[in-house]
Length: 59
Image (tube, one colour):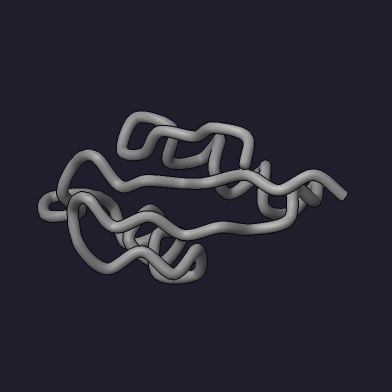
């Protein structure tokens, strides 16, 4: 599997609860934090749900 790096760019404040929980599930807690995940269908789906808050790149 390919790996992707996910970086949080914007705050989760004033966002719906499902978006906050998606960021938590991805392991993101603060702006600027970077996490690395396998590019599975579930991870890519979570990233797409909060794509306006994060940036991604291939690792």
